[in-house]
Length: 529
Image (cartoon, rainbow, N blue to C red; front, side):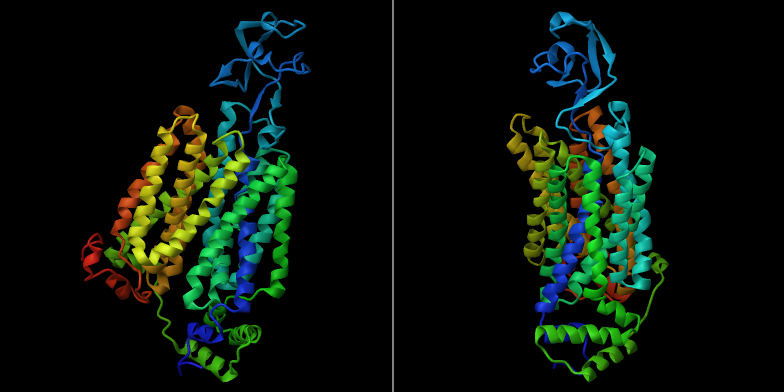
């Protein structure tokens, strides 16, 4: 056994940094993240603007659709969704059966692939209703904005595991209720509740998944759990492809949340949270179980010494307002907020826009989701070698360049456009992951959780704006991608002003946090003293 003053990390090293028990817990919480990710992103398909056109009475029974060009105006080589030429009640639906000088609005519609989203059920067809579809994504983000601080409070008060279970199961229940929505307003209300109650699930799942892993394996396991979020999106795309009707799709998807009910009996609570709450007996039980499953031994006296050391440790705390006493930390906080807004805006914007890349939105969404995985792996491989700042800046600028290149690729080169889009999503994902790391390392321990939650809340501003990009696309098609490129580039430049935190100890006090990056020549871009 190691030192006479044990820490939790030293005990985990003695028990096996990545033993059987840790593999079990990482698997459990990865599954939870997969389920949360799929439910959280479901609005991309439930509120999607599907392909449809005007119904032309008297012609739909014709075995061939060659009459379409006679009956419906074409816009960009596609039949108009909401207008048709005046039908003169002919018998053959040929050119002479329509008055092409008179265009009238449709009363009914034909859905090209038999897909049904809320557009179909709540009569949200045509451009004047497009804002109602895009509003669903914004409502989802507002729910997160409201739910994140509440989830943080419940997580600190009642535990990470309890918060995780309540968040995902509640989200699933509201999703199932939403699948029976009789109206658009009802749907939006439960979209908000779903998102608000599920807001803290990812953070809790991430913390629980990596906490019992030894320090040398923690980054790797964190990367794998991040990849689980992408796998949840892949699951979502596959399920939506298999069940193109939004009501049964939601019911099947959200039913998976009830798996989390079993976690009360099989998943461990956060040991660090138990120690902070002075629930030492429960913490000892979990660590003893880790030792037993991993085939290690640990004495009760050693565990008692850990609890005693934790109880007598320095518990200095600061109110969040103490941030404003340090202008250096204030500037870092503002920079973090901008970086979060940019990363979230680009990440969710590219995710939402992926379903409009080609005629197969499901495959495009799956490919775009899979592109996140090499982004997370790149962070794992590069973030310590290149440093946080350089990695963040280079990934954001790469995202910007890929978005710009996407705009210049001809429309008929779909594979090349898709490749540029995937590179942008991959690099944007990596930047988002590094943003998490930077935010968790530049603030002192007493303020770290609250400031990270605050930055994440500001990030929701980006996800509120991102769903509205299809409205801007109606004004000028390249505009959304140009905005993604601009925000990514600006954030890439500003990220160079962060202090480098690679190979540094996490600061425990405001003074220690202010010292990060000082007297280091390689940090020429950090804020001056």
